[in-house]
Image 1 (cartoon, rainbow, N blue to C red):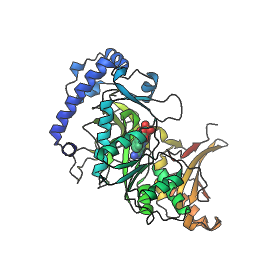
Image 2: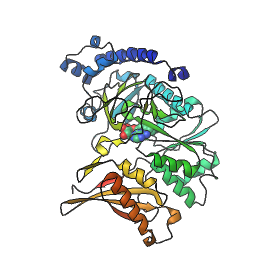
Image 3: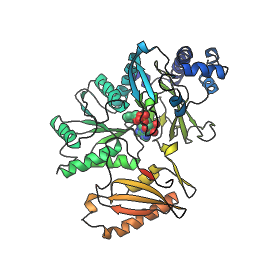
Length: 431
Ligand code: DLL
């Protein structure tokens, strides 16, 4: 069934979307406190929603709305029907509570199974899930999908890197799921143990997700491990991973349009953006029972590929996420995304696998200091001979981002590591 739905003709896809949208609208109207109020305040009634365009009658929903209606305001079914809670990672304030019915879990698992299958995963593969198990969706939701596809799943979770490597070697793991930051750290530890990530493991695929990363970082992971690495996108508010996934062409991620409606808007004005134009991704869940959200502001910047994919799947593709709207920082009037700095750094072979951007204010002058680990091969215990590298990084960043940074080269392995999502930018200007 899923294979057919991936290639569904566009008119049929639209029909399916309209009928699912109507179902979702009815469900939230009946069940959710937040939506009952919203319908009333906006003079809306489910009968007014007859086409996909009618969705524009709805205001956008933000993370603040989710927080303000914590914990049960968005719930559209009775508690008896809810079988699972996940929360969204957040560094500040209350988490966002995300609920699942049994059918929601089943639907998410199907999307993961579909996504993994299209990259060539199949029964017989040994899948090691190195995402956090628990409230984060990257662990359990992906796990269910991999089991659904019939893979042997090792629920390794995060951390304890030497044990992870032991598992990879003992069970001849062929596929891993992890954050890109952790993939590079894992490679470091494998090499520190005197092993070669290409020859001493059995890996063939990696799924990289849960945080922005550049094409250059993917290329590094592929090169270091000698594998294919696929980009996987999702967010807890839309049931976690499995929202969009790369196919073997690796040109953008197919966003599963049978389950989500997408729009791209100008994040400042809310005006719609056309295909090919970058903006903030807005998602509506089409296939969800416990907690459908209509027109959710993901905060993620991307664009829709106007061309169809050579693989023939009809679900449109979104570009690699450039970053979150709120990750962007402004330095001397220039808007900078950490991913742009990453792209430049990871494209230079002498640069190691980790970096940090520190924003500082000195006598009311702002500056950007980039702390860059040097690649092990180029580090012989001292750094002075790498002066030329410092200069090259500086001028590349200057010419591409229009900011002259200070570059601080540091020893490989000296920055803090994480097995989850990384924190790249330290903004000390507000202190
Ligand atoms: O990160 C769900 C997930 C788990 C996705 C495992 C992929 C793999 P949250 O913790 O709610 O959920 O964080 C969602 O992470 O809005 C993006 O800003 C970012 N993000 C997720 N995947 C990608 C990606 C999970 N492939 C937020 N590229 C999203 C860039 C990503 N950013």
